[in-house]
Length: 385
Image 1: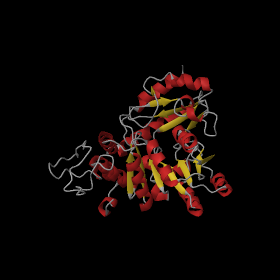
Image 2: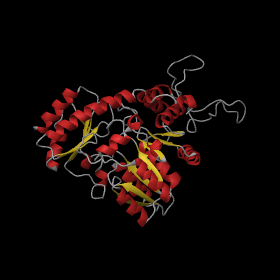
Image 3: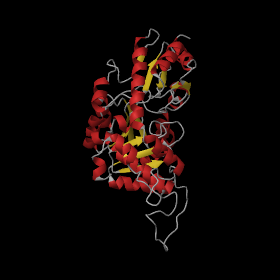
Image 4: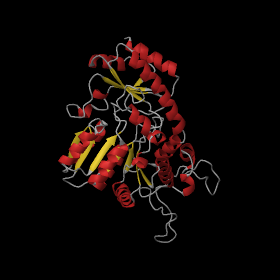
């Protein structure tokens, strides 16, 4: 990110970073570069460093520039999926015998990657409520971890963790602090500015924003770690393809305005649900009743588009999830359309029976950008079934 970029506002960076008009044709929107190989001016004479599609692609470079700018980082690396990004970071940092201290309310795929893929390799996984600073300190004191891994707000129970506080613990103990910023996005929260070491994204979600591209990213400031991650990106090969990178870049350009609408709609849904007699609990940091509300108000500029709700029972939760009409029953989140998900049997089925299991009565709503009145009417009718 250049000095002039640093002076620009978030929305301007999202639209312009890495998006200079094509120098040959003047294309305002840079083209998609599909070529897998690049002509060399003599052996080793690379044009702008490009030689082969796995090692580099101009469209991917543009996305990485854009990602670094909007997260306020020095480096960004783009991958074929969020889990590919996570796996690369973990392999770059960990060795057999190392510990990862993980939030006890995280995406099931992250837990599965650590427990079932890296666990047999010798990585030790421990879980703790990351929103409880005393619990984190006790766990760190018992056995120092190599990585402190947090989602905030978390998936799907929307716990809020003090990023600056966690970063201080990391500095004291030498642990790398990794923040999954998928739910908040850099439009609402920038963990690097609060002291985090690495930011992780599933760009499939809000950054892409249209449920039409799978991707992941890492953003960081550490030059040496970025070099190691870049090497693994090349050597292992889980890179984002050029069209995927282009679609993600296009999505990011409207991220600021989309997150405002997602947040406003979600706030309306959460307030309605909190008053409903058939609802046992609403998980949304924008509510004053949420235990992390004050912290979220300090470290986020708005509260995001995810609302989770506990109903009377698992049966009631399933019935509600299967009764919506405008909310589509589907995995994933963060698209312009509203989705409903039953975590216990869908996104978090892999953590059933573990410390990270999701209560069976919980339903997760990814609130889209449709008319709020229509979304409220759909929720109301689904609760009446």
